[in-house]
Amino acid sequence: EVQLVQSGAEVKKPGESLKISCKGSGYSLGSFASYWIAWVRQMPGKGLEWMGIIYPIDSDTRYSPPFQGQVTISADKSISTAYLQWSSLKASDSAMYYCARRADSGWFLDYWGQGTLVTVSS
Amino acid sequence: QSVLTQPPSVSAAPGQKVTISCSGSSSNIGNNYVSWYQQLPGTAPKLLIYDNNKRPSGIPDRFSGSKSGTSATLGITGLQTGDEADFYCGTWDSSLSTVVFGGGTKLTVL
Image (tube, rainbow over all chains, first blue to last red; front, side, top):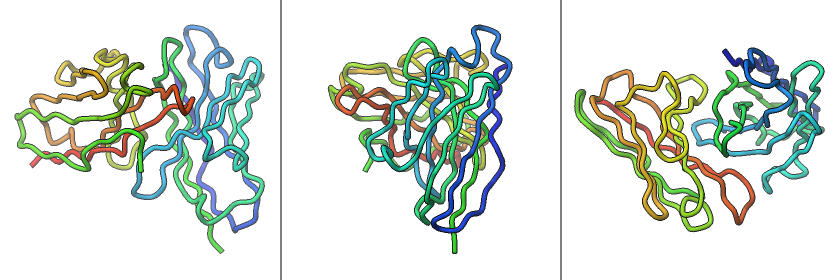
């Protein structure tokens, strides 16, 4: 069974940096590196927002326009892990962040991580 | 403001049927497949429907999806209290070159 396990909740101050992770396992067909991994934001009480996606084999990365330049998505295929990072957090970055695997047959997300709650407060 | 439009809430009694609509445009729903996700309270979203009307393994046939033109619909029959959740539609948007989601619909089983 495919599993995406995300790093734990974080509490940070504005201006601090942060890198959260998403480790994949249990891929019976193909490998972690051969599936795109997406990051999705969910602000408190709000809906899902697509942030961007990465292909771990070659680190090809695509960002949704609102998130371009605001975050960095990366991956280390050798340890089956994708990352989402901020260089300078803002209070408005407080949200739940999910990683999810894009299915190989289309633009839908077939497996999701459990989520990482990021709280940014002074 | 989400690119895809869903009703904020729907409700129905146990055992009844409910439908949730998702409206878009030719750049998204009109020319791409639609997927649906269920988010139970306090949990991560889960894939419910993909390619407009296909169910992943393990999803009961009480859940169904359809698409017509620039709109899609999720149907749930035989409602159970355990179905109470937020539901999101999603699809690729060819103009924005990104996946877009609906704003979500909260299902209440009265």
